[in-house]
Image (tube, rainbow, N blue to C red; front, top):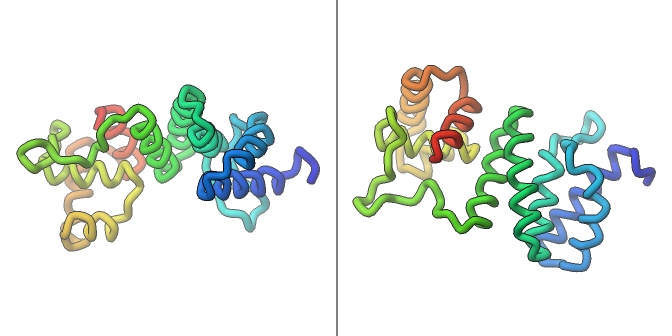
Length: 182
């Protein structure tokens, strides 16, 4: 495929994901070199190809597999910024999760010693849990399942979070949680 084709980028991201899933170091090294020039782009092919996130997210995963943690942290940080700027909270949350793993920082959803997560002011402990799930890109249904709540209760918590923080939408909540260190 010509190097300037959308299809090359889409196919290479697919190869990167397969190499990571298969723990294929040789394949990862090859595809990393193919993708490196596209680090500042997002994966988007023809109209029938779904958005695939920032290329830097795949580069971070490849670098991690190959043991280059410094590059992985660099590219994962870049992926967070690019995904947030593009309005892609799921990809931003995925990149933040990779950063937590690389930096060996505890997951933000882990409980405090008293059994409930530390709150992010001005949110209640339960709203904090919901906000953290929003930041991870979870749907209301997924949040309800994870927290053993009804979907309607989650909807009420989301409305309360938006009102308390004076934010317009879930993407803004995700960005706020990230800035608040949650």
